[in-house]
Amino acid sequence: MTTLIAVYDSSGRCIGRCDSRCYNAEEPKCECICGGRNHGKGLQQAPDNTREWLLEELEAGGFEEQAATLRRLFEEYKARMGLGGTARYEVNAEAVCQLSLPLEV
Image 1 (cartoon, rainbow, N blue to C red):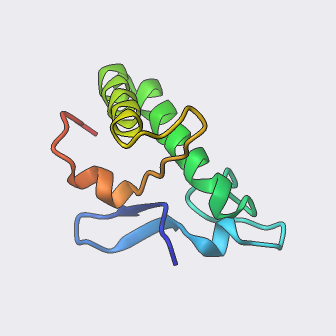
Image 2: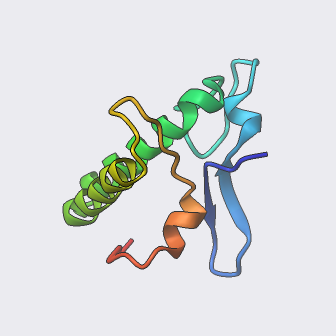
Image 3: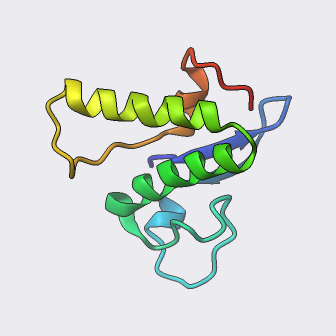
């Protein structure tokens, strides 16, 4: 089960996540942390939705510089790996939180 994004409280307890129960869902109801953005979209589309959501939230929260840094890193990675303009890249929020980036969220 791939977790696309998860939020933990200060004690390390997961308080919300978006995983295959959401993006592979067939029922109409969604109570996931994505708020329905990834609901039933499948693993091909949901990572792109999550990446854009993360960037939008950073920008909306006043973290335009951090969002720009992430966008640049995503594009540099695609270029370095020889991926074309249609290449997908996934954001796993748990991994992003471990990057040495100037994120202040």
